[in-house]
Length: 346
Image: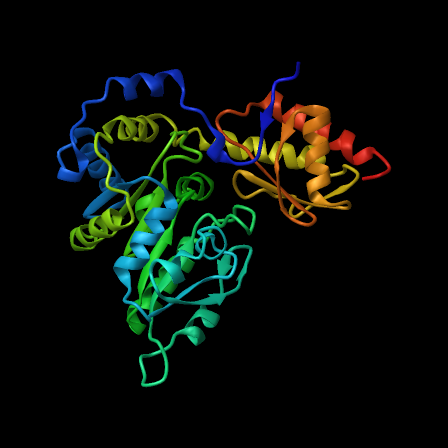
């Protein structure tokens, strides 16, 4: 029996034996009362790592984004975000439903926003229109193929936002992939934000969790939003211990995932049935366009070769590398994709 190679997402990682060990031994308290020492330590570490005053452990990146939007805005405000942003497409309409804000979309090229387009999209408060109060960015940009927003773009957008009275929130679910790819520190990226979140449960290999960072005043308000959203956890130190382990052991190794993603791209560059979005892979994602329906190609990959991946649209597939995928797994995936693509029906 072939073992499954799961390339659907970097969320499918399983905690290592060492991570499970520190979770089992974690000192815990009640985090709603703010007396779980392991959660408090994770929050302190995360805030220092990103150069922010305070941080808040969250169950998920989606809840982090919800709490950030709710904290930065008032009902009836307008926010700006990429039309392909995670908060636009994959958070069940939370800006509108939970935060009661309007969403104005902008378009990006390879995940990098157009500064002039954003400047033209900002609305001042008036008798007739909602004021734009928040700019949401995503780095790395998932739907664009894992591209990194350059530090200079962050700087220019932050200056623009401050001139026009907007807050800036960074959905940095894969921020440390951006760090690994660019050589720019997380603190440098975060310096051009009012709040930033990063996921522990993706490339960093934790079973659960995200951390939201900002000023002390912002985090105090966000804690109330977290409670309102049902995110007040009790003995959460068991989960926070995994986060501490990840910060110590799983950041530097993200480059391995990028190397594996490029190897996958190189290996299927001439495969029949699929066309690469780009031959240069920015981080840990490889997107391809299929000649036949993507869902059918995905099914064949699994049925014939036990390779899992995800259909993102009618003819688009995403492969994501992570710490549970090694070079041998990548080579198996290359052979499988080439085999399925070579069949006449594909």
